[in-house]
Figure 1 (cartoon, rainbow, N blue to C red):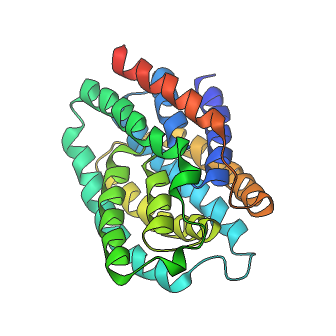
Figure 2 (figure 1 turned 180 degrees about the vertical axis):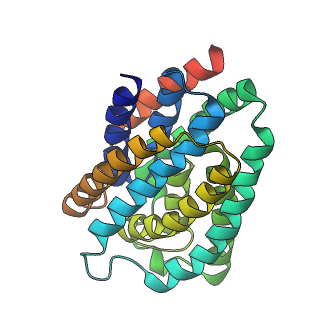
Length: 250
């Protein structure tokens, strides 16, 4: 029953994440902790979720012409691999501090929520006209930091990467979503390699997440393509806020 509930929650979260460019971890991570899984195991095994939703989204986006910036995705993948390695090693170093990790997840979600709420005001409709070289390089630096944090904490940080690609690098919203999903395949693979080697992964949880999020990521990305760039799911904000406060206060 525990794994069945996790599969249902992960599927819903991945659909929402596929639609909005991220933030699914703000639901699935605290939900898994509440279902009784150890925080470190959750964060490590959730990389299967990242692998599933990124693969599902990529398979849908690749059907659209000129939606994935292939050159940028390839360059970002190099930075993503290094940042993912650093972030995953950071979590390995924190694995004995379960209470600290649990509360940190809550605070990270609360930090990300304002960016989700004000998504329309923050994103740039036509970023290409506004993205100078300095702005782009600053965006690449921010992406490296965010990928490091995502590899260690998860919890919706991927949504901030989407905003950086849109606001700093100058990608149209849907292109930013598609390009980020491509680089996330590299992040998930590198992080999983570290977590598997250190014995932090629950394989039953990982398989459950992989299957449910692959399907959810494909469906969510399909909706994003059909509905357009302005879609945002307000339910993510409400549910994530309640879960984050609960983790911090319990």
